[in-house]
Structure formats: structure tokens, C-alpha cells
Length: 178
Image (cartoon, rainbow, N blue to C red; front, side, top):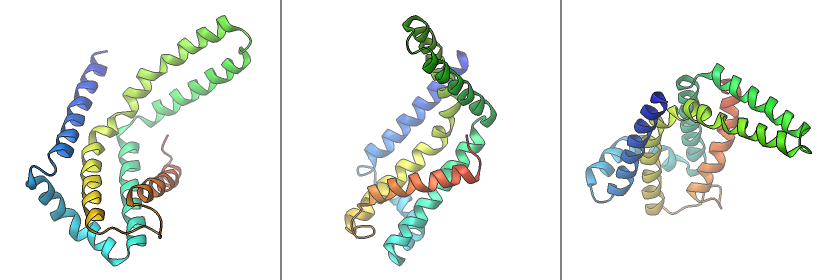
């Protein structure tokens, strides 16, 4: 329980930092300027080169970064074991769907997985939440100043979201991430 409390405190502090960055983005110009100093010559150059392919490349790089962080900051074997146990429990629940008492007992067991799963999977958020918030704020500024549609009809947000899902699935498979 002490580990959970320490992890929760750390996650809470990182989330507060992320919210502070998002909140003060326009009121503290140094945040916006520092991020632009880094992203304009890299991501901005890709988007100026070709908005469609640039967005694909940027999304692929971000997705690769997130998947690698997830792989190397989580206990993959423990995560696989938890998922295996959950799958077995779901199979048992299907067998006992006509027995409410047994089903309720199995559902209680299933709820016990939530803290364990949360503990294992939330660690990458500590490392990725602030950079992602910074990227999203920069994207928003970039596409507000340069209103274009990705592949003719996607806003930057939907293009990023769809491409990120696709690239994440591919990279999770390639790097065998639980």
C-alpha cells in the first residue's frame, strides 16, 4: 500500500505539472518559446515540408517513443501474468453466468486486479504526460496559425489520434509490449 501511495503522489505531482504547463502556456511566454525553440525546427520543418507525410512521421516518432517508454518502464512479465489471470477469470465468469452468487464472487476477484494493473501501467505516464501535453499545445498553436486539413479532411487532432492508434498497435506488436 505504501508503494501505491508513493506512486499515486508522484503521478499526482506530474499531472499537476502537466496541468500547470497547459494552464500557463499563454500567460508565461517562456514555456511556449522554449517548446517552440525545440519543436519548430524539427516537427515544424516536417509539417512545412509536407503536411500529410510530416504528420505521419511525427505521429510515428511520438508513438514509437511512447511504446518504448511503456515497454521499458513497466514490468512486462507481471503485466502478462495479470492479463493471463484476467482472461482465465473471464472464462470462469462465462461458465457461471447462470449462477449469480458465484458470478458476484468472481467479479469481486476481478476488481482486485484494478489496483495491481494500475500500479504497473501508470508508471509510463510519469515520463510521458508532460512531453505529450507540450506537443499538443504546440500542435494547437501551429495549426491555429496554419489552418489546414490532414489528407484533405482531418483536423490535426483526429489525424494524430487515428495515426497514433495505428502506429501504436504496430509498434506494440513489433516490440512485443504487453
